Amino acid sequence: MGAFAQKNTTKTDTKKAPAKTEQKTAASYRCPVCGATADKAGNCTKDKDVTLVKVGDYYCPDCYMTSTKPGKCTMCNVEMKKMETTSAKK
Image (cartoon, rainbow, N blue to C red; front, side):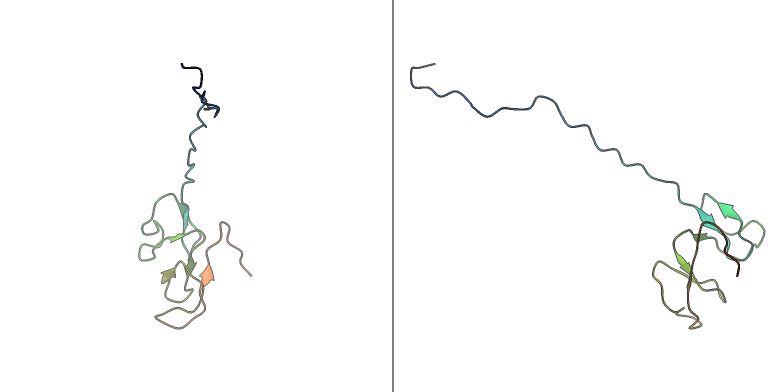
């Protein structure tokens, strides 16, 4: 280097930040009729004509239509219920 050469004063970090690992939690599904649980979407094994609802999604208690948003059912205009991890029967 020459007499007037400047050194690189910025530090470069040789350590790399650990890669962020996304932990995907397995989705859980429940039957709105009998409360049976499953790890995969599909129909209930006990109630063959009823589709399992993803926990956290909303479903119509009358026709079992599902939605990711709360509100009224688009088929029968009944208030949607949120599918919880445990059945809270009132």
